[in-house]
Length: 166
Image 1 (cartoon, rainbow, N blue to C red):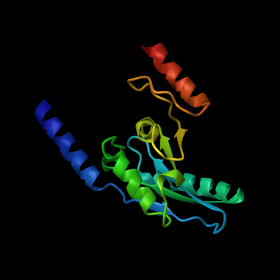
Image 2 (cartoon, one colour):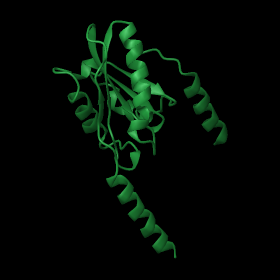
Image 3 (cartoon, rainbow, N blue to C red):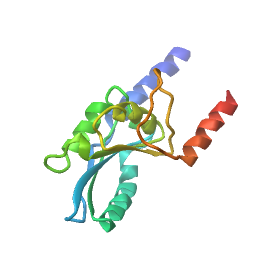
Image 4 (cartoon, rainbow, N blue to C red):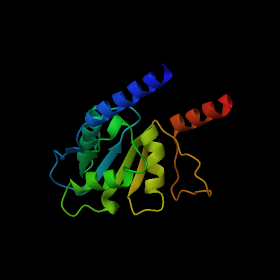
């Protein structure tokens, strides 16, 4: 019985993974200003199209501040980010935006698990920055220090909740 349930679960994952969405690229409505790109890395089991309204809202805010912001939202099998595939997915995402887009023009935003995985990608790279959405700065082996100041109320509460539980 246990083996058949495991086989059923694996088959369901394969079918669901094959149905993963395509890369979403949203061009800015605003034509002037500075070109930048925001790559949104979603959380576990959340389809990338669920982040499209958030991307549009951030683009509108950027346009109000003279920023021509492209938004790219990569898709992952099982709608869950994979740390091994993340560098290629982010590169593919920003490569599909404006001509000449380079890592220095890219902010990586990660929601939940996507935020945790994005930290290793962004730390020590030439990306413009990291945005955590419902995530927190994780502890990485080797004692990573971040060159930026940050404040994350939800992340601190989340981290403290996990500390109390253990």
